[in-house]
Length: 284
Ligand code: C5P
View (tube, protein in one colour):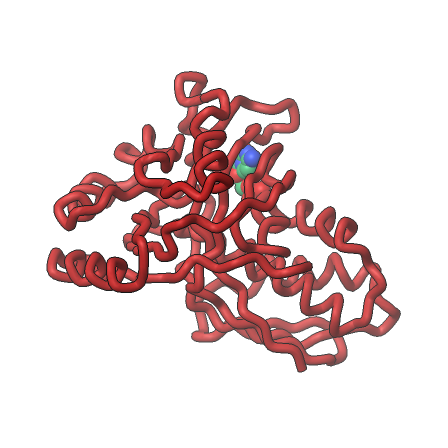
């Protein structure tokens, strides 16, 4: 039996450079893994099955974990199968990458369980077929991503060690595609904000106000929660930003004490927040 943790992410920067011929958008983003995590258990079994706990926390049918397992089984020894348990803790469709991380965890765990001789590069190519954020989660840590999100360059972790995250209720399946659809050329940029985030990380400088997210421009129209939540963070002394396509918002905190204090100030304002540590990268 293999048990592993599939962490969430936040985007320290997210830019769209333009539309691509394949229907996707050309992005520049800096992703950072945080220790809000799902748990995945994998056992050898006949066939492929998935149990989600708590029941209903994520869909079973069409779950990326099952799609990852099916893709990998095509290159596994005949008869390979697994009974998979997915314990959800990361809110679904929030902009925190939970489903993508679960898929990456399943790829890594099943490659091991089924003893498949598959290179890291080949695994990353399978990951990219499952979703634009899946390759990032094979290694985690902090990384710059280009292309659809699958061209990755590892970066040092931020000087700030914690994030404080609030996840509003309106998470909804299919919202990523919808959020991309709301972006027009006026929201496209040239990679400079992401370049500045990468520069500060490499120089060991605090990120401070360098965080950037192109979806901020359309978030007020997309998410009824957005303005109030942003104001609550500001009132609590922090500037917050969407993670990915939202609706989750986060602020950086220097350390655990600062994160806990911000979490409490948000709680006083009626917002249930998580304080989470930024995670170093593993090795695929
Ligand atoms: O890759 P993934 O399946 O996570 O993407 C979900 C949707 O988000 C895509 O169907 C596409 O509409 C949009 N997307 C995009 N450009 C990207 C990544 C995602 O337009 N780089």
